[in-house]
Image 1 (cartoon, rainbow, N blue to C red):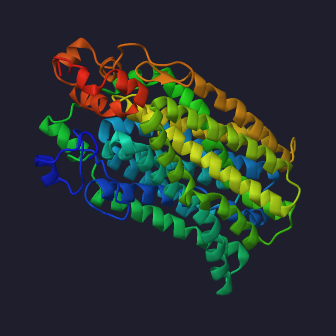
Image 2 (cartoon, rainbow, N blue to C red; image 1 turned 180 degrees about the vertical axis):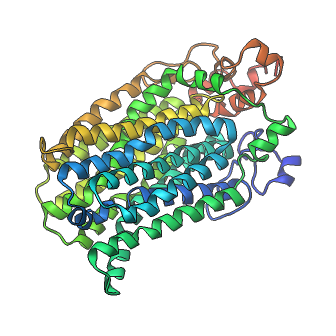
Length: 503
């Protein structure tokens, strides 16, 4: 039986075994048990719908560009706008999750951006097309609420698996939109609608999907195993934290900025490829729109196993080697992703290009989940802000990559992909600088006699501790002892560390 599982009162309340924070220690993937598995399915479905909406224009660009007379520069600008909008939205989403909970925060951003998806159908110029893609991109902030929600619902030994699966299935929206939009467009044309009208009608499909999932989250979702934030705060069970203190503890943690820098490459490549890959194969190998869409869809299709696999690998490495194992796995996979990106840019045939694209997709998306296996441990008090900084880094990475390598005619698309891979290898090096004093880092081991309680207690002042605000952090500290490597755990076991008297 997993450590920390309760078998008395809590087992009667929850359908799944839980730890001391009531987080599930099991993950029956096909279950819809409330609240843990229901939150999982609602979160990935909502993120999936937002991904479909944000990149719905990409597979139809050859038609849209002819209708709106878009230049290569205006197409690139619209692609940049689609991912840049979420930069600040993700930072705000992180803070919102800390303060009002993932359910309300994610549902509202989804509902507020849905009108922009509907308005895509009336875009009549390069400027209006850019604006609707910019606003629609805000919905990608639901990635942060997804990660926050999974970390709130699932225990530390399986949090990498939960995060990887939720983000991976959500990212499948990038694959689905490459298939759905050309099919919907083709069906509308068959009914006798002109090409330039058909693409506009097609946008109603992602808009409706996004709206429906937002309402589903609000009606059927629950923030934590014990209830929603608002009810828990009113009853006094949960401390109503101050934004300034949560934000302060988030931005002062240097690990957050390093994860943002490194994640800026992995997720940056994913977003960039979703914008360029269909048009890349369409133009370079003179393919039909539908065939180019199928190849582009296969880039996202690997999310079925790549991101969940990365999450599982992170948890396995964590159980065997502790946090140091998670960091080493992250570095290796993301570096290999950069290598395959370089090879994709240099491939000269259709077959080789498709093979390198698939390998790039597998490794770069698995490395994203390996990132998510580390992020939940950076902070307990400012978990949402940390996730927002990391997620914002992914969008900033996508913006920089597209501005530097794919905007204008400075580089060909294949050379841009090659340089993107080189950039990725360099951006992965800072993982070696991430260090947890209680667990160590890639190079250096942990500090002697430094415990998980010491690390997470440092986020609370003496006055806050006296009022008992830190108690949930201490439960998290106890459960996160699973991040010790077996060697360290044999030196001082959890039972040998006295629980602080103030808990």
